[in-house]
Structures are given as C-alpha cells and as structure tokens.
Amino acid sequence: MRIVLISLCTPTLYNVRAASALPYHLLKGLQEIESVEAVIYSFNINELSSADLTVVEKELNAKIHIIKPPSWIKWMFRLKLSFLRIFMRYPICAYYGIHEGLVQDISGLKPDCVWIYGEELAHIAKKFGGLHRIVTMPDCESLYFYRLLSKPWVRNSFLEKVRALCGFTQYNRYEKASSVTDNNLTYHFVGKEDASFYKENNPFSQVIFLPHPLYEYNETRKVGFHHPLRVLFAGRYDLYCKHGADSLLQELEIQSRTEECNDTLCKGIEVTFLGKGWENWVSKLRKVGLRVQHINFVDDYISEICNHDIQVNTIDVGTGTKGKVLDAIANGLLEIGTKYSLENIDVSSPESCFLYSKPQEFIFILKDIVNRPSLYEEKAKLGMAQVRVTHDRCRIARALFKKGESSRNEE
Image 1 (cartoon, one colour):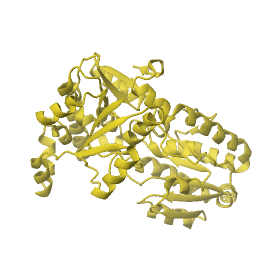
Image 2: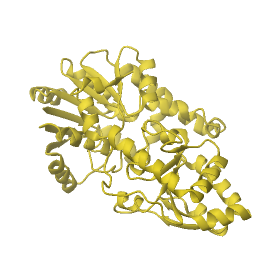
Image 3: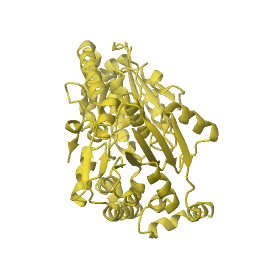
C-alpha cells in the first residue's frame, strides 16, 4: 500500500512541540498488518533537526520531504506582529499550502491514499480530486472554542472572551469553507463529540470517529497498589486543568486538616506532580502534612507513570482524547477524572475508572481506595484490559485506511 502523508508536523514517537505522535502510531499500526510504502511531506512546525528526521525516516521506513511555510508568516512572527492573526479570516496555519508542482509530483506517485494530518491543512484535499483521501483533524477546533465560551472564567473576562470568540469564528468559518462533499474523502476524528459537531456544520461530508490509538505501554506490568498509595497528577498546570485542579486541590488541602482525613490521607497516600507549574500547590499540600513530590520532566514517561497506582486528571476544557489519560489506564493505573478527561476512552465509571464532578466526590473515592485497595485494583485491571483492545493501533489503522469497513463508526 502506498501512502502519501501531508502534515503540519513531522510524526514522532512521542509528541514533540506538537501533537505529532498520532500519525506516527497510526502509520506504525498499519505497517504491522500490511506492507506500506510511505512518503511524508511535512511543514515540520515541531522543528525536528536533520538528525531527528533521519531517525524518524528509519523508524517509519519512509522518505520525509520538508515543505517551507509561507515566508510572510515567518516574518510576521519575527517582527512580533502575531497579534494581526485576530484580523484574519481563517486560523494562521490554514494559510499553509502546497504549490501546483508538488501536487503533480504527489499525484504522479499514484498513492492508494493521500492522508492529510492537521485540521488547518484540510483545504489541501481539494487539490487531489479523484484520489482516495483522509483528513485526520484529529480534534474539531471550533468545538474547543465553543466549549471554552461556556466557562465562567472566560465569559467574565473581556480579553478571554474576545480570544475565544475569534478562535471559534475563524475555525468555524474555515471548516465550512474547506469541507468537501466527496465519496473519496473522509474526515477522521478521535473524538465522538468532535465528529458530531463537525458533521452538524458540514452535513454532507463523510465523517468518522475512531478511538485514539495507544502509543506505548508496559506489556508486562502487573497491577498491585503500594502502601501508601501513589497518586499522580500528570501534565502541566495550564489552561486545560488549572481551574479544575484549583478546586480539587483546595478541597484536598481543607480535608487534610481534619482529624479523620489527616489520619487517612496523610498516612495513606503520596502525591506526585509530574509537569511544570505545580510549585504553589506542592508547598500548600506539604504544609497540611501530605507527602508530596514534584517532578518537572522525565526522559522515560511510561516508566515513570508505572511507579504509581492512581492518576488524577482535572481537565475542564478540551476536545478529542487525552493522551496522558489513555497512557495511564493502559499501564494499569486507576483513573480518576473529569468528564473531559475521560471522554472518548473505552472505560466506564465506576466499573473501570472514576468520573467525578465535585471535589467532595474525589475525596470520598480516594479515602475508600485507601481503605479497600484490593477492590480498586480489580477496577484498574479491567480498565487496562479494555483499552488495550479497543485502542489497539493496528485495529484502528485497519479501520481508518478502509481495511475493515465494519469497524468504522460513521457519524
């Protein structure tokens, strides 16, 4: 099978300065079930070096060609004029394109599929009429800004509201302008709500949702909780989780001061923050007697998370599938998270994970795990088994590239 991939970022084993791991693992998954000849044309927005590009070429058995972005965009950022984006009709990366000569070169390869990665490149699909095409979005950006506008901390800030409205308008307009009604063109999402939202705006387009593929996991890891329990907060303290984290950790701080919780939590758990920006909460939780450590960065992420029993995710805005959540469940951690943390992952609360909506629920669950660890170990095992099947990258690659029509979940 011959595939030509046109991508904003260069595929990598792990995300490197962009969501670059998804195309890497989908291609890997396809290569594990079929002979694949891959040619990659990348704008390399994640700025891989020549040495890194050579490594990726070898790992994917592919030839990588770098496409230069529009020079005016480079100058815009060099001259610190990026604020002008707000006046543009479309998102800035939607102005990336390929010249007619390259279109002819790619068509001349007679690919079985022209695969476009990155929503902002969706318009390129129009240049390859007649060929089988897939656009992997992978999230619907207009849905992200739509959800953002529902948050009180956005609505109550004039600047944040303007930013979100601008983002929604640009992406919504672009999605409608770039969408094509064509039986040979499929728009692929890793979020069910993302696919539905896009389909509502573009009702005649072919849209599919497929689960997010697993990247890497420790196949030999056995689930067995430590004492005290090792509780992990993974990811940066940023826009996506900040407000949810503040309310949850504030409740943990308050409850840890009470005699009952102090006896249960301070003696029964160890908290680790893996990511930047958590310093303030590390200090606060230590003051109330909790055992806390903070790790800014690790070379081997999978190896590190396997040192823990429970992962907590407080994401309260976002779309698609949260990779760190999927990684944790696949490696046997019991996941406790918000609605947006757990969406599009094949687990169900309370059988194989825990969905909480209020911080008090989180405290109750955490105390119960301390008191009945063996019960919750079984839930973690069930979640691990489920996602390793449903989110298997070979299974998803086969469905995406039409090797198993019955596996496709068309919206």
